[in-house]
Length: 404
Image 1 (spheres, rainbow, N blue to C red):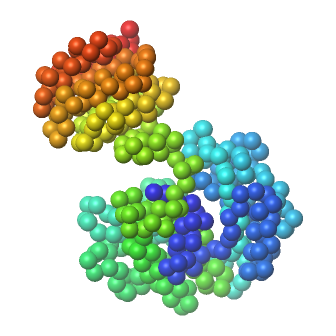
Image 2 (tube, one colour):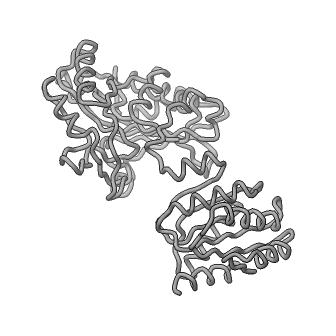
Image 3 (cartoon, rainbow, N blue to C red):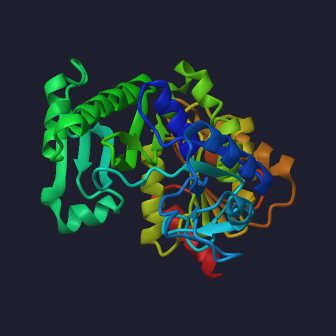
């Protein structure tokens, strides 16, 4: 589960991570009030206004309607309202949103932390994630903060620092010091970075997250270490342990069909093709999509109805797939193991009759337990549903109806 920057910063703050202070606002008037409150709290006179969407590259992104960037600086309190208005309600297009962009419902009004002092501010990159190859958590850091880490890794891989953490023993003090030392820090900044890394790792483990990315981590001119941005991805499977974190989910940032599928207990991911897929089992779903591609089609979705599929889940799957206007055919591919093929066949027939007149061709491939009984139910239903024996045959039938 992704959360917004302002939410992520509050989570980090709760674990002792120092952050760039700010307040969220959903209107230009609220943004001005946030700036007044921020000035009273921190004394800042410049204000950073950041679009809150689940996408990176906001600073380089552009709001379609106004031409404003997704992250702007207001150098006067009187400018906050106008600059926030140019972002709120608009469609922000970044390198991660695609051309369709994302609607901005909230902005974060944050303090200016790039103030003058004894030394120049310096930006760093830092992330924590699971390295599945080693079964360990890994801290990744770089002196090249504020940049796309992919570009740094491609052009300057020597500038990527990696420190693997054994999850059985956790982060050791010498490891946090090693990272801070490799970043070239010393004195107060070194000590502050060690504290920052330790608190950040504690937050990562404590929230059952799958990824933390802070870009940039800022060393201020007076040697404070702050999280200026924060991207946090929490493991969905662990949310039952964190009900307060689960409340941070913003459904407006997610695909409506994926949200609806989740309510029905279905695993659904929307794609850009024209063949709707309904399969039981993630591995079989991947193989089905591959076969559709090899036969010249394009999968419109990943939809796993699970091992306990019944008429209700099959009908829910149908309704979700049919809401995608790009779908021109539906392929149902079921291997009868935990769930019998005749049960799936009955579910297909009941769902078809319940939904009504379905004009999209449907091809059903059933194999495994009671496959013959299932195929007979499909063939004798009188519905416009074709049965297939092999996956290749099913994919070719799909392609034939698309071309016909």
